[in-house]
Image (cartoon, rainbow, N blue to C red; front, top):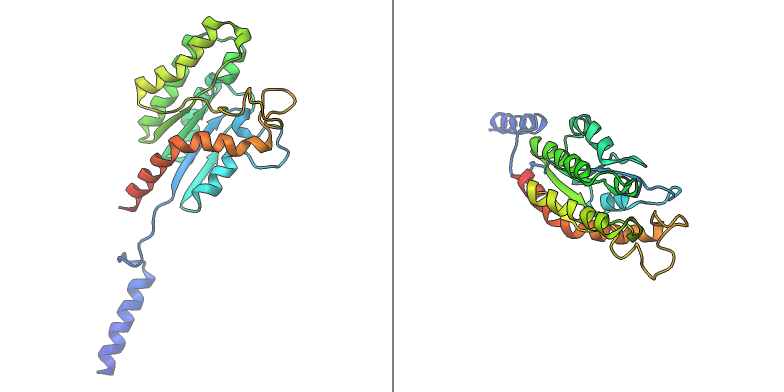
Length: 218
């Protein structure tokens, strides 16, 4: 009897050591969220304080990994040139594309911006990840024709590719009457504004992240 009991215990211990899957030992795969953006996501001027991307990692928790591949000053052309390597490096499940603001401020052609964003979204879809576009608006001094066309770019790309859309990343921050939300340059949000940027993204991202995590757990 003791010999049989010892053998059963030994087999159970061996199974545990080999990591054989049981209902009690299964773990949930980590979901990767990749952010490809410019200075608004790179934390320009925050001087060590947390950006909205850092706050996103805190909110999502340890079941998620947030990789920040944002570069200050980047454009849609720059993002497109590096997206293949970036996707291969991080193997993301969700990709937030926060680019286009620098293109608009430089007055780059609308068709070029649209084509670049479309190609980036399609590259994300090609690796079976979900693209999210973080939209941007241009200041009125660029003229109504350009600013209106620029705003439609994100809507057009989202409709054409099926990407999720954050209509305006700086909603409630840019042109806000609240003091302390924008840096002195009038372009970049302060540390105090980062929580609002996160909420703007979170409204769109949360259901996608939850769905992706549920799928990984199956």
